[in-house]
Length: 359
Image (cartoon, rainbow, N blue to C red):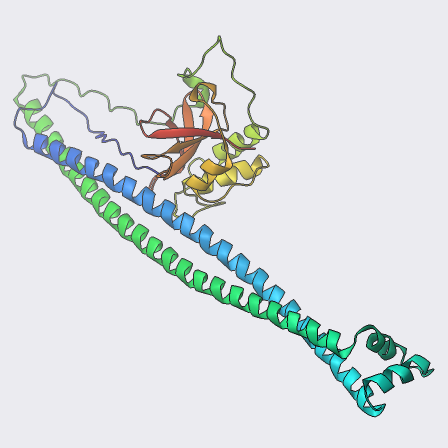
Protein backbone atom coordinates (compact mmCIF):
# COMPACT_ATOMS: atom_id res chain seq x y z
CA UNK A 1 0.00 0.00 0.00
CA UNK A 2 1.92 3.02 -1.18
CA UNK A 3 0.14 6.33 -1.06
CA UNK A 4 0.13 8.33 -4.24
CA UNK A 5 -2.03 11.43 -4.31
CA UNK A 6 -2.34 13.49 -7.45
CA UNK A 7 -3.30 17.09 -6.86
CA UNK A 8 -6.28 17.88 -9.06
CA UNK A 9 -8.27 21.07 -8.66
CA UNK A 10 -11.47 20.88 -10.63
CA UNK A 11 -12.17 24.63 -10.78
CA UNK A 12 -12.96 26.42 -14.03
CA UNK A 13 -9.90 28.34 -15.20
CA UNK A 14 -11.31 31.29 -17.07
CA UNK A 15 -8.07 33.12 -17.72
CA UNK A 16 -5.20 31.53 -19.64
CA UNK A 17 -2.94 31.41 -16.55
CA UNK A 18 -2.57 32.68 -13.02
CA UNK A 19 -1.27 36.12 -12.27
CA UNK A 20 2.41 36.03 -11.32
CA UNK A 21 2.79 36.21 -7.60
CA UNK A 22 -0.95 35.70 -7.00
CA UNK A 23 -2.02 34.27 -3.63
CA UNK A 24 -3.17 31.09 -5.38
CA UNK A 25 0.46 30.41 -6.38
CA UNK A 26 1.43 30.24 -2.71
CA UNK A 27 -1.42 27.81 -2.07
CA UNK A 28 -0.32 25.65 -4.99
CA UNK A 29 3.19 25.51 -3.57
CA UNK A 30 1.81 24.65 -0.13
CA UNK A 31 -0.39 21.91 -1.58
CA UNK A 32 2.56 20.44 -3.50
CA UNK A 33 4.62 20.40 -0.31
CA UNK A 34 1.85 18.61 1.61
CA UNK A 35 1.46 16.16 -1.26
CA UNK A 36 5.16 15.25 -1.00
CA UNK A 37 4.74 14.79 2.75
CA UNK A 38 1.77 12.51 2.14
CA UNK A 39 3.84 10.44 -0.27
CA UNK A 40 6.51 9.96 2.38
CA UNK A 41 3.95 9.32 5.10
CA UNK A 42 2.18 6.81 2.89
CA UNK A 43 5.36 4.74 2.63
CA UNK A 44 5.61 4.76 6.43
CA UNK A 45 2.00 3.64 6.75
CA UNK A 46 2.57 0.84 4.24
CA UNK A 47 5.65 -0.38 6.07
CA UNK A 48 3.90 -0.25 9.44
CA UNK A 49 0.90 -2.16 8.12
CA UNK A 50 3.13 -4.83 6.58
CA UNK A 51 5.10 -5.23 9.84
CA UNK A 52 1.80 -5.69 11.66
CA UNK A 53 0.67 -8.37 9.20
CA UNK A 54 3.94 -10.26 9.66
CA UNK A 55 3.76 -9.98 13.45
CA UNK A 56 0.21 -11.29 13.42
CA UNK A 57 1.25 -14.28 11.26
CA UNK A 58 4.11 -15.04 13.66
CA UNK A 59 1.74 -14.87 16.63
CA UNK A 60 -0.73 -17.23 14.93
CA UNK A 61 2.07 -19.71 14.23
CA UNK A 62 3.27 -19.69 17.85
CA UNK A 63 -0.28 -20.17 19.13
CA UNK A 64 -0.74 -23.17 16.82
CA UNK A 65 2.48 -24.70 18.20
CA UNK A 66 1.25 -24.13 21.76
CA UNK A 67 -1.98 -25.94 20.93
CA UNK A 68 -0.04 -28.94 19.63
CA UNK A 69 2.22 -28.95 22.69
CA UNK A 70 -0.77 -28.87 25.05
CA UNK A 71 -2.38 -31.77 23.22
CA UNK A 72 0.85 -33.77 23.47
CA UNK A 73 1.09 -32.96 27.18
CA UNK A 74 -2.46 -34.22 27.71
CA UNK A 75 -1.57 -37.48 25.94
CA UNK A 76 1.56 -37.86 28.10
CA UNK A 77 -0.51 -37.32 31.26
CA UNK A 78 -3.00 -39.96 30.14
CA UNK A 79 -0.21 -42.48 29.44
CA UNK A 80 1.25 -41.84 32.91
CA UNK A 81 -2.18 -42.25 34.49
CA UNK A 82 -2.63 -45.60 32.76
CA UNK A 83 0.88 -46.76 33.77
CA UNK A 84 0.33 -45.81 37.41
CA UNK A 85 -3.04 -47.57 37.43
CA UNK A 86 -1.45 -50.74 36.10
CA UNK A 87 1.33 -50.58 38.71
CA UNK A 88 -1.21 -50.10 41.49
CA UNK A 89 -3.22 -53.14 40.43
CA UNK A 90 -0.15 -55.39 40.16
CA UNK A 91 1.11 -54.18 43.53
CA UNK A 92 -2.21 -55.17 45.16
CA UNK A 93 -2.08 -58.59 43.53
CA UNK A 94 1.51 -59.05 44.64
CA UNK A 95 0.60 -58.17 48.22
CA UNK A 96 -2.40 -60.51 48.28
CA UNK A 97 -0.46 -63.44 46.87
CA UNK A 98 2.70 -62.97 48.90
CA UNK A 99 5.18 -61.26 46.59
CA UNK A 100 5.96 -61.00 42.92
CA UNK A 101 7.43 -64.49 42.51
CA UNK A 102 4.50 -66.10 44.24
CA UNK A 103 2.01 -64.05 42.30
CA UNK A 104 3.64 -65.00 39.02
CA UNK A 105 3.29 -68.65 39.95
CA UNK A 106 -0.29 -68.20 41.11
CA UNK A 107 -1.30 -66.16 38.07
CA UNK A 108 0.21 -68.80 35.79
CA UNK A 109 -1.94 -71.47 37.36
CA UNK A 110 -4.98 -69.30 38.05
CA UNK A 111 -8.27 -70.14 36.43
CA UNK A 112 -10.30 -67.24 37.78
CA UNK A 113 -11.97 -64.68 35.55
CA UNK A 114 -9.42 -61.88 36.09
CA UNK A 115 -7.88 -62.60 32.70
CA UNK A 116 -7.03 -58.97 31.76
CA UNK A 117 -5.14 -58.32 35.00
CA UNK A 118 -3.27 -61.63 34.74
CA UNK A 119 -2.21 -60.95 31.16
CA UNK A 120 -1.02 -57.42 31.96
CA UNK A 121 0.93 -58.56 34.99
CA UNK A 122 2.61 -61.41 33.13
CA UNK A 123 3.54 -59.02 30.30
CA UNK A 124 5.07 -56.30 32.52
CA UNK A 125 7.25 -56.96 35.53
CA UNK A 126 7.48 -54.30 38.20
CA UNK A 127 10.94 -53.30 36.96
CA UNK A 128 9.67 -52.92 33.41
CA UNK A 129 6.84 -50.72 34.61
CA UNK A 130 9.11 -48.51 36.66
CA UNK A 131 11.37 -48.02 33.65
CA UNK A 132 8.41 -47.21 31.40
CA UNK A 133 7.03 -44.79 33.98
CA UNK A 134 10.41 -43.07 34.19
CA UNK A 135 10.49 -42.66 30.40
CA UNK A 136 6.99 -41.23 30.43
CA UNK A 137 7.99 -38.79 33.15
CA UNK A 138 10.98 -37.60 31.09
CA UNK A 139 8.71 -37.17 28.04
CA UNK A 140 6.24 -35.18 30.08
CA UNK A 141 8.98 -32.93 31.44
CA UNK A 142 10.25 -32.30 27.89
CA UNK A 143 6.78 -31.44 26.61
CA UNK A 144 6.19 -29.18 29.61
CA UNK A 145 9.46 -27.35 28.92
CA UNK A 146 8.49 -26.95 25.25
CA UNK A 147 5.09 -25.57 26.20
CA UNK A 148 6.65 -23.07 28.62
CA UNK A 149 9.13 -21.93 25.96
CA UNK A 150 6.36 -21.50 23.41
CA UNK A 151 4.25 -19.54 25.89
CA UNK A 152 7.22 -17.24 26.44
CA UNK A 153 7.50 -16.80 22.66
CA UNK A 154 3.76 -16.11 22.53
CA UNK A 155 4.13 -13.29 25.04
CA UNK A 156 6.99 -11.82 23.00
CA UNK A 157 5.02 -12.18 19.75
CA UNK A 158 2.00 -10.53 21.36
CA UNK A 159 4.13 -7.58 22.45
CA UNK A 160 5.61 -7.30 18.94
CA UNK A 161 2.14 -7.35 17.36
CA UNK A 162 0.89 -4.71 19.81
CA UNK A 163 3.90 -2.49 19.08
CA UNK A 164 3.40 -2.89 15.32
CA UNK A 165 -0.29 -2.07 15.70
CA UNK A 166 0.52 1.07 17.71
CA UNK A 167 3.07 2.13 15.07
CA UNK A 168 0.61 1.74 12.22
CA UNK A 169 -2.05 3.68 14.14
CA UNK A 170 0.39 6.54 14.76
CA UNK A 171 1.37 6.55 11.09
CA UNK A 172 -2.28 6.59 10.07
CA UNK A 173 -3.08 9.50 12.35
CA UNK A 174 -0.21 11.49 10.84
CA UNK A 175 -1.44 10.58 7.35
CA UNK A 176 -5.01 11.63 8.19
CA UNK A 177 -3.78 14.95 9.56
CA UNK A 178 -1.82 15.62 6.37
CA UNK A 179 -4.83 14.71 4.24
CA UNK A 180 -6.98 17.12 6.24
CA UNK A 181 -4.42 19.90 5.68
CA UNK A 182 -4.33 19.13 1.96
CA UNK A 183 -8.13 19.26 1.73
CA UNK A 184 -8.17 22.61 3.51
CA UNK A 185 -5.48 24.06 1.24
CA UNK A 186 -7.26 22.78 -1.86
CA UNK A 187 -10.45 24.48 -0.73
CA UNK A 188 -8.63 27.76 -0.06
CA UNK A 189 -6.84 27.51 -3.40
CA UNK A 190 -10.12 26.92 -5.24
CA UNK A 191 -11.60 30.02 -3.59
CA UNK A 192 -8.59 32.11 -4.60
CA UNK A 193 -8.64 30.83 -8.18
CA UNK A 194 -12.35 31.57 -8.43
CA UNK A 195 -11.81 35.10 -7.03
CA UNK A 196 -9.00 35.78 -9.53
CA UNK A 197 -11.17 34.52 -12.38
CA UNK A 198 -14.06 36.77 -11.26
CA UNK A 199 -11.79 39.83 -11.13
CA UNK A 200 -10.46 39.16 -14.61
CA UNK A 201 -13.94 38.60 -15.99
CA UNK A 202 -15.13 41.90 -14.50
CA UNK A 203 -12.17 43.78 -15.99
CA UNK A 204 -12.55 42.29 -19.47
CA UNK A 205 -14.46 44.16 -22.20
CA UNK A 206 -17.98 42.87 -22.78
CA UNK A 207 -19.05 40.41 -23.80
CA UNK A 208 -17.28 38.40 -21.12
CA UNK A 209 -15.58 35.30 -22.42
CA UNK A 210 -17.49 32.11 -21.83
CA UNK A 211 -15.92 29.92 -19.14
CA UNK A 212 -14.12 26.83 -20.26
CA UNK A 213 -15.94 23.59 -19.52
CA UNK A 214 -15.06 21.87 -16.27
CA UNK A 215 -12.49 19.11 -16.83
CA UNK A 216 -13.97 15.63 -16.66
CA UNK A 217 -13.04 13.81 -13.46
CA UNK A 218 -10.32 11.20 -13.70
CA UNK A 219 -11.83 7.72 -13.85
CA UNK A 220 -10.20 4.33 -14.10
CA UNK A 221 -9.72 3.28 -17.70
CA UNK A 222 -11.08 -0.20 -18.45
CA UNK A 223 -8.36 -2.73 -19.00
CA UNK A 224 -9.20 -3.17 -22.68
CA UNK A 225 -8.95 0.54 -23.49
CA UNK A 226 -5.21 1.01 -23.06
CA UNK A 227 -2.51 -0.65 -25.16
CA UNK A 228 -0.16 -2.84 -23.19
CA UNK A 229 3.20 -1.28 -22.50
CA UNK A 230 4.66 -4.75 -22.02
CA UNK A 231 3.47 -6.56 -25.14
CA UNK A 232 6.12 -8.27 -27.22
CA UNK A 233 4.62 -9.99 -30.26
CA UNK A 234 7.87 -11.77 -31.19
CA UNK A 235 8.13 -13.56 -27.84
CA UNK A 236 4.81 -15.04 -26.70
CA UNK A 237 4.56 -15.05 -22.90
CA UNK A 238 4.21 -18.33 -20.99
CA UNK A 239 0.67 -19.46 -20.20
CA UNK A 240 -0.98 -17.78 -17.23
CA UNK A 241 -1.32 -19.61 -13.95
CA UNK A 242 -4.35 -21.85 -13.52
CA UNK A 243 -7.11 -19.94 -11.82
CA UNK A 244 -5.77 -16.57 -12.98
CA UNK A 245 -8.93 -15.62 -14.86
CA UNK A 246 -11.06 -16.34 -11.78
CA UNK A 247 -8.65 -14.35 -9.58
CA UNK A 248 -8.76 -11.32 -11.90
CA UNK A 249 -12.55 -11.48 -12.17
CA UNK A 250 -12.84 -11.64 -8.38
CA UNK A 251 -10.49 -8.66 -7.95
CA UNK A 252 -12.57 -6.68 -10.46
CA UNK A 253 -15.69 -7.39 -8.42
CA UNK A 254 -14.08 -5.64 -5.44
CA UNK A 255 -13.60 -2.32 -7.27
CA UNK A 256 -15.00 0.52 -5.17
CA UNK A 257 -14.89 -1.31 -1.82
CA UNK A 258 -13.15 0.59 1.01
CA UNK A 259 -9.56 0.17 2.14
CA UNK A 260 -9.13 -1.03 5.72
CA UNK A 261 -6.06 -2.16 7.62
CA UNK A 262 -6.12 -5.89 8.05
CA UNK A 263 -9.13 -6.13 5.72
CA UNK A 264 -9.36 -9.46 3.95
CA UNK A 265 -12.92 -9.25 2.61
CA UNK A 266 -15.62 -9.45 1.84
CA UNK A 267 -16.49 -5.83 2.69
CA UNK A 268 -13.05 -4.15 2.93
CA UNK A 269 -9.44 -4.90 2.06
CA UNK A 270 -5.83 -3.94 2.52
CA UNK A 271 -3.31 -4.67 -0.24
CA UNK A 272 -2.40 -8.28 0.59
CA UNK A 273 -5.93 -8.96 1.84
CA UNK A 274 -7.24 -8.13 -1.65
CA UNK A 275 -4.76 -10.36 -3.48
CA UNK A 276 -5.35 -13.15 -0.95
CA UNK A 277 -9.12 -12.87 -1.51
CA UNK A 278 -8.80 -12.74 -5.30
CA UNK A 279 -6.57 -15.80 -5.54
CA UNK A 280 -8.73 -17.75 -3.11
CA UNK A 281 -11.32 -17.59 -5.90
CA UNK A 282 -8.57 -18.89 -8.22
CA UNK A 283 -7.98 -21.92 -5.99
CA UNK A 284 -4.71 -20.77 -4.38
CA UNK A 285 -4.20 -20.07 -0.67
CA UNK A 286 -1.91 -17.13 0.14
CA UNK A 287 -0.84 -15.60 3.45
CA UNK A 288 -2.12 -12.18 4.50
CA UNK A 289 1.21 -10.41 4.02
CA UNK A 290 2.79 -8.86 0.92
CA UNK A 291 6.27 -10.21 1.77
CA UNK A 292 4.90 -13.66 2.56
CA UNK A 293 3.05 -13.71 -0.78
CA UNK A 294 6.29 -12.77 -2.56
CA UNK A 295 7.89 -15.88 -1.02
CA UNK A 296 4.86 -18.05 -1.82
CA UNK A 297 4.83 -17.20 -5.55
CA UNK A 298 7.11 -18.05 -8.48
CA UNK A 299 9.26 -15.26 -9.92
CA UNK A 300 8.25 -14.16 -13.42
CA UNK A 301 10.19 -11.73 -15.67
CA UNK A 302 8.39 -8.44 -16.22
CA UNK A 303 8.48 -9.17 -19.96
CA UNK A 304 6.40 -12.34 -19.38
CA UNK A 305 3.80 -10.88 -17.00
CA UNK A 306 0.26 -12.25 -17.38
CA UNK A 307 -3.10 -11.24 -15.88
CA UNK A 308 -3.36 -12.69 -12.41
CA UNK A 309 0.33 -12.24 -11.59
CA UNK A 310 1.12 -10.26 -8.45
CA UNK A 311 3.20 -7.08 -8.45
CA UNK A 312 5.35 -6.31 -5.39
CA UNK A 313 6.57 -2.86 -4.38
CA UNK A 314 9.09 -1.50 -1.90
CA UNK A 315 12.65 -0.23 -1.59
CA UNK A 316 13.94 -3.84 -1.73
CA UNK A 317 12.70 -7.42 -1.50
CA UNK A 318 13.11 -7.43 2.29
CA UNK A 319 11.30 -4.07 2.42
CA UNK A 320 8.24 -5.09 0.38
CA UNK A 321 5.23 -3.27 1.81
CA UNK A 322 2.64 -3.25 -1.00
CA UNK A 323 1.33 -5.54 -3.69
CA UNK A 324 -1.39 -5.61 -6.34
CA UNK A 325 -2.82 -7.96 -8.95
CA UNK A 326 -2.04 -7.37 -12.63
CA UNK A 327 -5.16 -7.44 -14.84
CA UNK A 328 -3.71 -6.74 -18.29
CA UNK A 329 -3.10 -3.72 -20.54
CA UNK A 330 -0.53 -2.24 -18.15
CA UNK A 331 -3.18 -2.01 -15.41
CA UNK A 332 -3.35 -3.45 -11.92
CA UNK A 333 -6.00 -3.53 -9.19
CA UNK A 334 -4.91 -2.46 -5.73
CA UNK A 335 -6.12 -1.57 -2.25
CA UNK A 336 -3.76 1.29 -1.56
CA UNK A 337 -4.62 3.58 1.34
CA UNK A 338 -7.19 4.82 3.83
CA UNK A 339 -9.86 6.86 2.09
CA UNK A 340 -9.13 5.42 -1.36
CA UNK A 341 -11.31 2.49 -2.46
CA UNK A 342 -10.10 -0.56 -4.35
CA UNK A 343 -9.21 0.77 -7.80
CA UNK A 344 -7.50 0.31 -11.15
CA UNK A 345 -4.07 1.91 -11.47
CA UNK A 346 -1.30 1.96 -14.05
CA UNK A 347 1.47 -0.43 -12.99
CA UNK A 348 4.34 1.88 -13.98
CA UNK A 349 6.00 2.57 -10.64
CA UNK A 350 9.68 2.97 -9.93
CA UNK A 351 9.58 0.88 -6.73
CA UNK A 352 8.47 -2.36 -8.41
CA UNK A 353 10.77 -5.09 -7.06
CA UNK A 354 9.28 -8.22 -8.57
CA UNK A 355 6.47 -10.16 -10.20
CA UNK A 356 5.11 -13.37 -8.68
CA UNK A 357 2.88 -16.05 -10.19
CA UNK A 358 0.67 -17.95 -7.72
CA UNK A 359 -0.14 -21.59 -8.13
